[in-house]
Length: 155
Picture 1: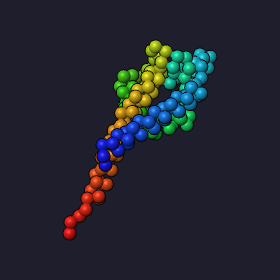
Picture 2: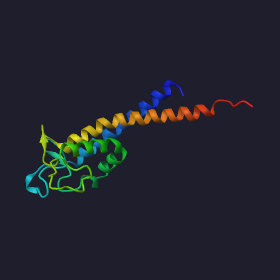
Picture 3: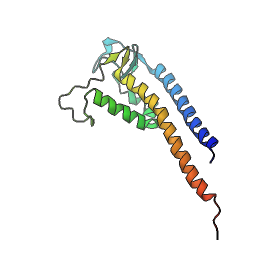
Picture 4: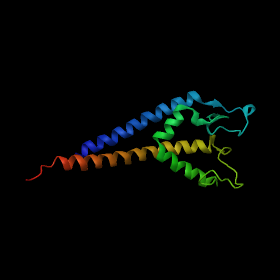
């Protein structure tokens, strides 16, 4: 496989990831609700909030198809950012055994963006690195196996 085809694979990976994120943000904007304190039950800020609008207000944000798609397609990036969020908020890494340490991520808002909102932005940025690595690994595998089978054997 030539260097040009490797570049094309990376270009396609970045292009498709960019299209995914454009569609994701369109669905996010359409699904976002206004942050209204009169509907406050568990926590007073949506899980993923940007300037007074958010997703996950008194509902599981992963009940929405586009949020599930993000978690599945961007799984490595999502896990890295979720673990970093758990460390920064002093939440246990397992998340199941919360020995009196409060979950701080739901209430932190900085510059109009919730802590989980920053996590989502970081997931988006890391996903481009993730897909570059996937494209490199795929191009290496294709080159290794297609290149080895295309060499004529003697005998």
